[in-house]
Length: 229
Image (tube, rainbow, N blue to C red; front, top):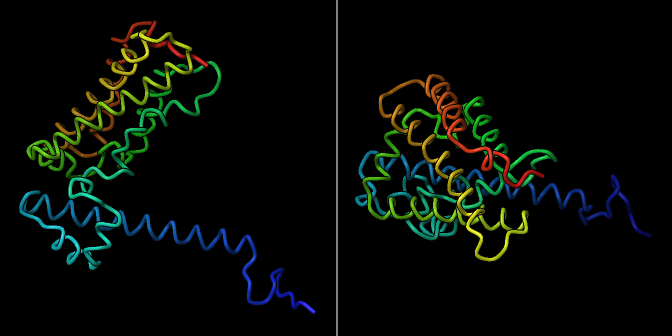
């Protein structure tokens, strides 16, 4: 006869227990990834990107070199890691918009939400300006950041083209996506500039919100209403 203990066959986890275990493992991986990235960023800021080796990152983070490479296939990934430098960033902003909301409105709302919540994803942390200066000064990182920005626009353009049924060769989806990418890049540029001047995150957030209002006022009605669900 089968023994049942708390809803599970003795010695075998229930489906709920398996899901819980997977969730714990995923959370542990996220913590490990973030820890390694934060340690690496600190080393890069203190010593320079080119001067720091993967072995030094591993030693300081108290993990193996293989563990670093498991999470970050290249040295550049330690700075531009997928959790925070995703080419899908703007796509995610527009993905879940409700009926009646345009792509531009979704992106603007998401950016304003990040500012109001002082989100670290928006660079609203002490030292972001220094980090941005370091990344821009290192050619390999500058190339990676520019590539991510282009990929972000490309990804959003593809989604907008599909949603609107744009004809092949119609430049509108890409032009709209490029303008929304411009809005985001100008906000980050302002955050970086003010962070470099040692302004407090709260002050920077308020300035970024004001800049978003100005940027929105410069977008045409067609852009603001494009791809409304």
